[in-house]
Length: 120
Image (tube, rainbow, N blue to C red; front, side, top):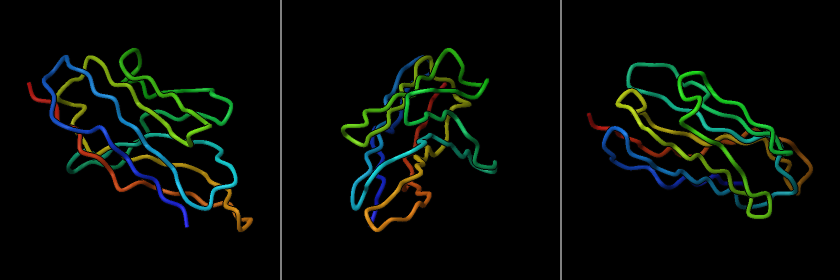
């Protein structure tokens, strides 16, 4: 069984910073792409930033220059450094990963989500 566990969310004032972490654990053989998504109340879930196994990154235009995704393959962990936070960044942030398990199958996994609230 594979689990993704996020941490690092919370309440922060506009202009502040937060760092999200997501650790994958369980019957993992390898991890391909990982990424962060977010879902604000009444809106669809959107991709914030993906990262390949080789460290190639991208991010949504709305967070470009403010958010940075990174990963530590040795720790099966992906991070999202969020700077210059705005009230419109308020959402539940979800970790996502494509994982090849020790049972020999690929599957896509989601974390349980972590709330980020930015006050004005």
